[in-house]
Image 1 (tube, rainbow, N blue to C red):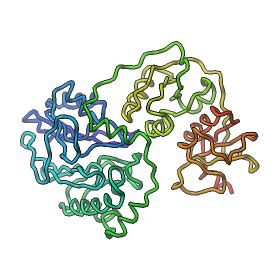
Image 2: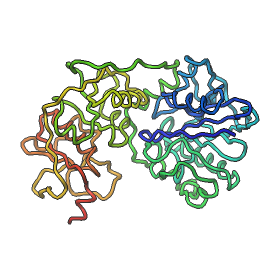
Image 3: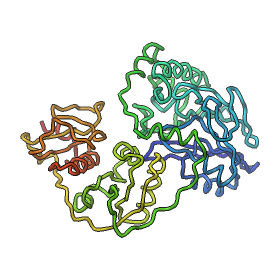
Length: 418
């Protein structure tokens, strides 16, 4: 058996190449929009990808099934409850697909979305998509009422838990995705381990539904757009970004590290550091899908990677990139420099601990400044490490605030000083 896992660390997404080397055939499961890694992997293994299997219509990232169809003529298989607008082969519960001598059994596991399916490969491993994660379960509120979705998901998880203990679990997401709240950093597990350690497999129905329905994890504003793109007509490859002489009147998204941004950036730029983690998700929260963007980068490679991730969350309106020297500066402070008299703004999510007695507004809501902020006083933004604080400060500076960011540390470090 050929089996390869691909993990996008920024989005927390997992996809898979499954095949039979002797037969020379393979399928790709839940491919991302950048399909080149799967093609390269298949080429190295000497197999030909013949089909795309989708566990469901993804809401957090753009699928590559359209590119596989348009560029390579490959069919896509998905459960009909997805109601796709493209040509597809329907999957059904209990159906067995063959890839050479490898058997892939379909298990309908609704909950995250009604069409969701898991794939059991040769009864040795299971690709659980957005149902069972390592240490957690998927959120049920992306397609239907959270309570209805949670009840379905609870039943689906019990079906998966009935698999033999030795079956290896490979999820569709790992830590870093918004599709769950307590996911492990581990990229795989086993049914036996999850039975013992995963709270979702031990919770009673009523408790599971109540907990799932009260999730506080925010949905990116691009969710509906990404679902529509993945359900609709195939989306083909987008042209590479070109370098521009200037950003003109477009919104500048500065993807350089926070210290580089602070030392010199273009007026009105928003800092979303490519190396700060969850780049695409953070950009999706603060950039409108129809807003023309110019990326401020240090290199062509940085521009290409940022564009890839922005495309993955449905942000297509990138006009190009610049490497212009920036003259605007952002003042940054270390935790030890915080003065209790300062106007401090905690820009983490409400679910993060420890909480503070300062004004708290998540960074993603700061394109419009909260009325509680005093524009006549400097604002000091703080998060866990500095990336979101810098992003938040850049949003406030655009609105005329004298904003500074705490970098190289965060709230937890400050709490230890008290």
